[in-house]
Structure formats: structure tokens, C-alpha cells
Image (cartoon, rainbow, N blue to C red):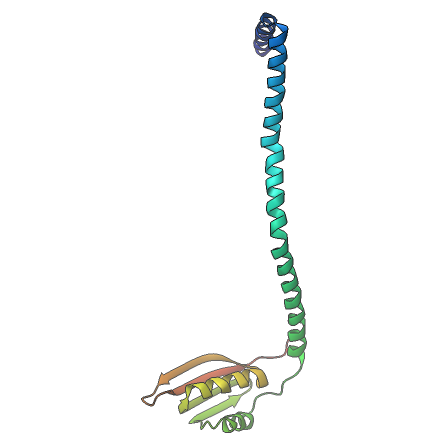
Amino acid sequence: MKQNMINMMTESFASFWQQRNAKERRLLSVATVIVLFALIYWIFINPALTNKAKLEAAIPPLRLQVSEMAIMSGQYAQITTAMTENIEPISRETLEASLLRKGIKAQSMTASEDIVHVQISSVAYSVIMEWILEMQKAARLTVEEAKLTALPEKGQVGVVLTMKQQKAVS
């Protein structure tokens, strides 16, 4: 059936072609070649050129990202090295000394193993934040739980903190 259909189409085309004179055949051949080249250009060449330009435009930001990632990787290596250094366990005396340097009076304070619990009845918000940052850097304490209560005096807060000392990475 298929072969029969193909034969019919071939005969039909041959008949159509024979009915045309030489000038028309040449014109149809040239038109067919032009249409084929146009199709090849629009299907294959144009998308390739367009995407090539887009990719070339995307390369500089990607190179920048690679360099940023390399910098971050170096920073990670430095941080890992710093984290492997042993920090002495936090003690009540260390906490008291650091609070005293900032002029903070703790209402209650406990330090056991790697957990620190501090309660302060009244302190300036900025001062307690500076102290928390100092403790994060000096003793690797991170805030596990924080409760800050605004007091009637401007900028003053009541604070209850639970902090945990980060252990060295092995």
C-alpha cells in the first residue's frame, strides 16, 4: 500500500515536471533551493548564532561567580582551621569578667559544660548586643534562646539568654 502510494506520488510529480518547460523547471529548481537554504538557516543556523551570543554574554557573570566561590572556599578553609583550635570551656569567672568590662550586672548566671544561662534585669540594648557579639567571637558562644523585654526607660531591656559554646570541628 505504501509502495503504491509512493509510486503514485512519483508519477504525479513526474507528470507535473514534464508539463513544465525548461525555463519554469529552472525557476522551480532555484526557488526550491532558496526555500531549502532558508529553512536550514532558520532551523539550524539562526538559533545557534542567537544562543551563542546569549552564552557569550552569560560567561563574564559566571566567571565572577566562580572567583567569588573560590574566595569563599578559601574563607571556609580558614574558618575550619580556626574552628579546630581549641577554645577553653566557658567558666563563670570568664563570663563575669566579660560582663564587667561592658558594665553589665547580671541578676543570675550559670555556666555548666558548654551551656550558659544569663539573666539581666536592665541593660542598654546596644550594650547587650555588643556583649553577645564579643562572646560569639571570643568564646564561640551562640544564642540558643533569647528573651528580651522592653523596659520603660528608653533603650533599656530585660534579658534572659541561653547560649551554647560551639565545640571544635574534628
